[in-house]
Image (tube, rainbow, N blue to C red):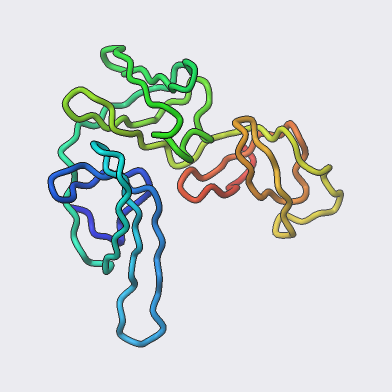
Length: 188
């Protein structure tokens, strides 16, 4: 049973008997002494698709959803459906772009380390690896003499997402991006 402070985007918990996936997570630290941190969480019900906003204290316990976790690899895009292949029995599962939401921007051909969450043989969602390597497609030219801790600039990556990168990076370079925060980590 995870605590509210241990929740991450993409985790699936059970609320009122239905599986809910964590879509957005925000921690709010109160200014008064002795008050505990509040976690505002937006869930999506995986059966009905309805959104649910809840607030929890850091030590509140949530119930894990009873789902099977299977390692899959991204295979191909079929229209608007992302197809994933089970690494053990080679069965395939599909999720459309709306179900993946922001996660779609981190999926590249042959991406491994993805965990599919299955319930009754149906895919409910996926958990991405902590980081992925993506190429910079478009950004302002690099500045000579820019330091690693200096200012940042926006860069469009190979999957179409935009992240802030240090000024010294050039188009064509491959970088490592954190899939939880969506931030630049390092060169790959």
